[in-house]
Image (cartoon, rainbow, N blue to C red):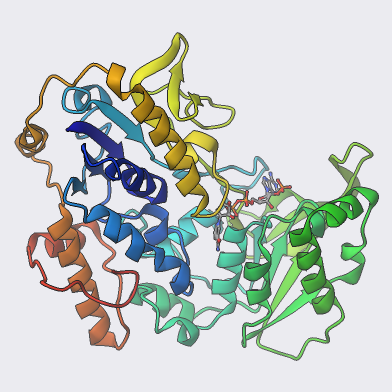
Length: 457
Ligand code: NAP
């Protein structure tokens, strides 16, 4: 068997497994630093998007292949190095994603009450690294910076009521905070115009379907300059977004308890406040002839006691791999890692660490297949790993006291989450603390049939 280690069990990693196992002579070990698989499908996709979450059922099928082992709770780089992995595997593919947020780079960004959307998403999805008490949501008015799908997710979840979300697997401590939320106004702030927004139409439309909130759009901000006109003429998705926004601009608010203000042409220049956030200062913008955003010098202050910065993710360097600080990706040629002296034998990347944080989940399928094609093309010329015994790497981890969660362990976690959900009347509820996840995994209950509901198989 050709032996491959995959680092990261998010969509890119699992789609790579799928492409590899088609061959029939490849054994794959999938490492994840978390006790659970699926990366952002579990910890990024919003709990009120069960259809997108259900992708995990297909990913489950891939990881249940007899030639695949899941090794959760193993941090490659801390528990075992990439260099060590090379003793056990003929090739290594890193699909570690983009773990942190991009910075706004304005004064006041670190005031209390200013958070990255990454932190908020991790908290409401019960990520084991997110402190339970990270958020209180006692702000009346929240400014969300960015016009991407993550910004739409956080705006939607702030606008909904806890009751709207109770049937999801959202953790109890999050529901309790949302139940006490004081939010009345949510400002979604874009530094460019509506034709440049990154959100997709389906996600945008959902904002208009929230029973608890009115969506407010200023018609004047939807006026199009020649650059935007051009985009509209060539991009059907942009036209659809504009149609939705224009519909809202002409609608009278109906007095619902919460208001979503979609604000275009506002570039953040400062998060203001004395120790705590008191507002977001923005400068009005326009496009110059070359299509670049320029400030007009008109400054506004948006009333806000909480700021959520949703301006994209950023990849982290992977110990042992080259890293391009500018793009926050690993330099590569069709997935082959490229160092200063050319391709690094036997090392590959896929997903966001390869191409940057763009695209929807399905984009990773094509991306991972490209990398696997490069790997399999190289395979006949790769030096075989010296250690061939599949148990040897497990023995090394055990020797170091690393508790690796295998597939049976993950199924036990799923079962425990279903039981937890039943206690409160939802199909499933998240176990959020790492210790509790490990405890559930170690119960070692291997169900004969996999549990239904939530994001499980
Ligand atoms: P994104 O789509 O890249 O959006 C980032 C937003 O931040 C853009 O509006 C960008 O504006 C703005 N921005 C960047 N730097 C800024 C700055 N310094 N000041 C003000 N605004 C700034 O990123 P994302 O929302 O994090 O999403 C990441 C990926 O996940 C995307 O591919 C997204 O589609 C995907 N995703 C999909 C779903 C779904 O399908 N339901 C849900 C969540 C995420 P500019 O355009 O002006 O740069």
